[in-house]
Amino acid sequence: MTLRLSALLGVALLAVTVPGGAQQSLDTPRSAFDGIDAQGNWSAAISRTERGHLIGNPDADARLIEFVSYTCGHCASFAMEGEPAIDLTLLTPGKISVEVRPVIRNALDLTVSLLAQCGDPAGFKDRHRAFMYGQKEWIAKFQNAPQSQQAIWARADKASRMNAASALGLADMLVQRGQSIADVNACVMDDAAAQKLINNGTADRLDFEVAGTPSFALDGKLLENVHNWAGLYPVLSARFASPAEGDLSTGS
Image 1 (spheres, helix red, strand yellow):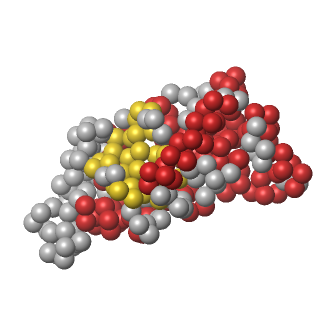
Image 2 (cartoon, helix red, strand yellow; image 1 turned 120 degrees about the vertical axis):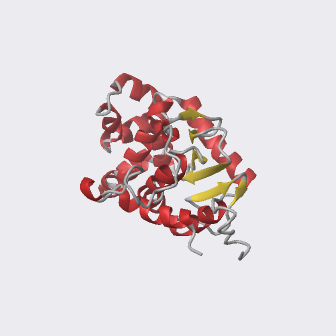
Image 3 (tube, rainbow, N blue to C red; image 1 turned 135 degrees about the vertical axis):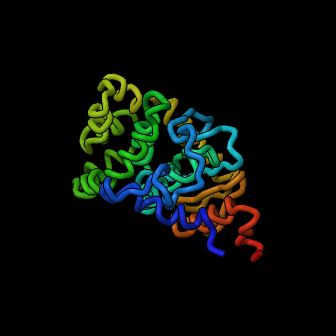
């Protein structure tokens, strides 16, 4: 039997991208989202954690950890394809919480991760998606820069982080969202925060054996060979299938 959540997750991305008049909604009769508890808006609940940011109901039955790199193209694709669907079907009704943890693969990752966590935790999701959705633009600026300039940014020290944040338009992305340039610069120059990001990434590699990005852990266990929305979607469908519909993993 077709799983209700499978259908919901499959159409959720379409629901947030089609023209307004054609969108499914929770209060539309016979909507594809009928049956989902829409009370509350847990997708707006965000708090800082030891290694990242937690989005959603902290007491949810399930917790998903996203291990992402801001310079990873597949991570940007997941942010655009998977995160809106999870927001709509699982986060908002409080069925799941999602913790986003940055993976530092290179110096540019470090700069962007410092910016993503800069400011009030409530604004984290907006900053996170701004950098993911705009990745092609600022990555192109990096790739088109002279090798000598790229070498400076690769040092990852305070001065080179500041230079990259300014030259690639990364700092401006936050200023345009209402943050002061002084606060943004302070975040980029924070060596202690930079070192903590590096240490956290090392700890996650040891604790979860994270080998690539994006990677995911569900209820504390790394999902093997799941590195995109196409791979994660059936896992979540099985996890949230109602007992009457059976669990895909058992074949019932």
